Amino acid sequence: MDDRTGHTARLRLGMAVVGGLALMAAACGSSSSSSSASSAASANSLGTGTCGSQGGTGPWGWTGTAATGFQPSHEPDVNCDGKVVIGILSPGDTNDHGYYESFVDTAKLYATKNGWQVITINKINPADAVNQARNLCRQHVDMVAVAASELKDAIPVSQEAVCQNTVWYVAGGQGVVQTPYFVQSQDDVNESLYAAGYASGLIMQANGSTKAGFITGPELDFAKQAAKAYTKGIQNVIPTATVLTAYTGSFDDSGLAVTAANAQIAQGVGIIYPYLGGATDAVAALGDQHNIPELTPGTNRCGGGTPAYAVSVIFSPGDYFAAALAPFAKGTLTIGTAHVWHMGKDPVPTVIICSPTGTQKQMVDALIQQIGSGAVKPDQIVNGS
Image (cartoon, one colour):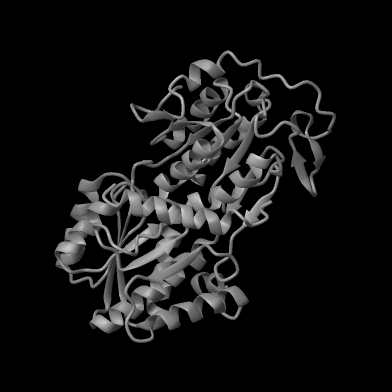
């Protein structure tokens, strides 16, 4: 990426913050990659994948209870083959300079530190998630890490014999039904996107604009909810504001996203939010050409680099993943549980105006604190409940 060094430094900082919390190769197209050792797949195919009796009543003999979660006795080398391999399933482009890439970057940082290996399967069609998950388990990975809940159809594979002695982690699993076979991180899209909209509203108010653009991929439930929350946040500042929303059908097709952005710019939008995926920077670069501010979908891009972003909306799965990999490295990750991250209570998610003017920073910080305290309830505001 253009600011890879800065992004990695920020990711390390985010990991240092969240890592201390007590949280607890069949490729898709040509997008499969591995790190730390090019022979990861072939080496693990020779592993025994047997650990002997673990003595518990949980999945694969793990100890614990449904109430407290389950503890594999051999993590991080869960399958006892002498190696630790993290297998990543991602629906998006893990070279997107943002949301999906943060997940892989986090895994690679831990792999480098601990001598692990990482296998990444990239741009997975949700319809192919089950097959890709089984193929990953056949490579005797110790952890299957699902980068986003778009691939939730793969989760039942965690209970199949092919995935015995494998732990599963699911990122951003809001609405994913918990089972004893995986650990998940959840956040609330209403919190993050309402605060993002509020920050956008402050910028629009200062610029004298009343129209915003929101560009995303397929018209999925979470994307529609994000657009709704974003609109409500803007209208908290500018009640008469409107948001032009474009669903391009692809998070990664830059051409479609740029076409949508051009159409919105022609209609006079004063700010644009490219929401998720590999098309993000292309939209932001176009916005920069027209002096239109943009927001990040998940990572902190304040502090320079191109394209330049006006607002960092930070809910990256890499931040959440770090808080699971830290105990996994120590052999203390508890499976069968969910950690819910809340704005104003945890370090992430959060929203930062990169170059605030006047009282903008204080106003955004105050909103985040009010969300954390419960004084402001985005779910009720967005959904009318």
